[in-house]
Image: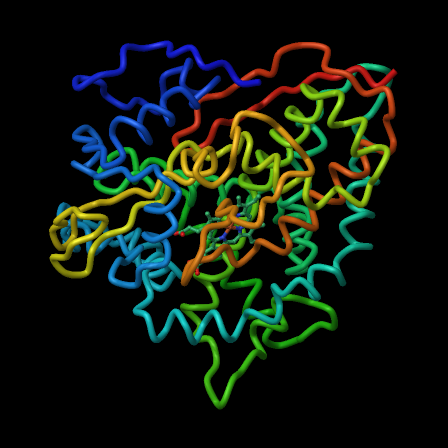
Amino acid sequence: MLSQTPTREFGPDFILDLDDPTFVANPYPTYKWLREQAPVYRWKTRGDAIVFSRHKDVRALLLDRRFSNDYRVWEFAQDEVQWPPEHAEYKKMMDNGLFSLPDADHTRVRRLVSGAFSPRAAERMREEIQRAVDDIIADKVRGDRVDLTAITEPLPMRVISDMLKIPDAMRAEFRAFGLAVIRGSILFNRTEELFATIAPMPRWLGMLREVIAERRKHLLENDLLSTLISAHDGGSKLTEDELLSLIQALIAAGSDTTVHAANWALYTLLRHPEQLALLRADPSLIRNTLEETLRYDIFGKGGIPKFPKEDLEFAGQKLRKGQMVIPFIPAALHDPEVFPEPERFDIRRDVSQTIAFSAGQHFCLGAALARQELDIVVGTLVRRFPDMRLSGEPVFQPHPIMRAITRLEVSVG
Ligand code: HEM
C-alpha cells in the first residue's frame, strides 16, 4: 500500500512542486488532494497553467480536439526571432514534429506510419527484442547482486536502433540526442538552458540526415527507416522534414519512457511478492500486470501541456486561447471513481479504462512496441530469476518530467 500521509501542508497556499523529493518518492497524497480539493488547480509557477487531475476531466481533455499540443499556441510562446541561426534546423524539426503539425498533416503522418507501429508489427519484433534482452542479461548479470537498471537502460535504444538499423558506431550519440530532445522539449522559454542542452544538435542532425540519405540510396529489408521512406498513402508521402522529425520523436519518446516504465514495473512487483507469485503461477497475466504497474505507480510526474486553440469552456471553466492546461495522467490513474481502491496493486484488476498511453489524437504511437518490450524484459527477468528480491531502496535522480530510478539493486539468489 502506498502511504496516505501527506508530507507537506495542503491548503489554499499549497504550491505544487514536482521536484520535491518527498513528492518524487510518493506523489499520491498530492494527487489525492488535487483530485478532491483542487480538481482545477491553478499552477502559477508553471506558466500560469491549469492542472486537471480527475479521470473524467483528464480523459475528456485528451480527447478534445479544441486543444493543441503545439507549444507555439501557448500565450507566452517565444518569439521566432530569438532563435540563433545554428538552431534553425532543430526549430524546424520540432515544428514538423507530431505535437506541432496542423491537424490534417498530423492525421496524414499518423496514417502513413501506423502500420509500422501496429500490435502486429510489434509482435513481429518479439524475437529481436528477446535476443536483445538475452544479450544484455548475459552481459550485465555477474554474481548474486544485480542493478536492474543496467538491464533496462540500454534496451529501448537498442531496440529502436535495431529497428532503424542505425550503425553501431553512432548509437551512443543517438542516445544522447534523444535525452537532449526530451530535456529541450520542456524548457519552453528558458532559452539559456535550452540552448545549452541542445548545443550539439547541429552535429546530431547532420548524422541523422546522413543516415537517411544513405538509406534512400540503399533501402533495406525488414527495416523501419526503409519502411518510413517508402510509406505512401494515396500518393502522399512523408516529407524529408517530417521523416527527420519522426525519427527524432521515436528516439526521444521511445527511450527514457520505456526504461523508467520497466524500472517501476519491476520495483512494484518486487514490493508485492504475493502479486509476483501470482504472475509466476500464471504468466498469461503479464500484459494485465504491466498495465496495472503503469496505473499503480507510473514514472511520469504530471502531463504534457495542451493549449486551447480558441477561448472556450471546458469542465465548467472558461479558458483563454493559448492558456496552458495540463492533464495529470498519473493522478487520473488513481481516481477511485474509475479504479476502486486505487492504492491496491492488483494484477487482475480491470484496467480497460487506463489512459497511461493517453487517448485520442496523440495516443502514444509506440504503445504496442513499449508493451512488447516491457512484456519481454519483465517476463524474462521474472522467469530467469525465481528468487529475485530487492536488496536496497531504489536511488532516484532528478529528472524534469519523470520519477527516474537510476539504481534498483536486487539479489538473484
Ligand atoms: C511505457 C512507455 C510509454 C508511455 C507510458 C508513453 C506514453 C505516451 C503518452 C502519454 C503520449 C501522449 C501525450 C499526449 O497526449 O499529448 C505519448 C505520445 C507519443 N509516444 Fe509514447 N509512451 C511510451 C513509449 C513510447 C515508445 C516506445 C515510443 C516509440 C518508439 C513512443 C512514441 C510516442 C510518440 C511518437 C508520441 C506522439 C504521438 C502523437 O503526438 O501523435 N512512446 N506517449
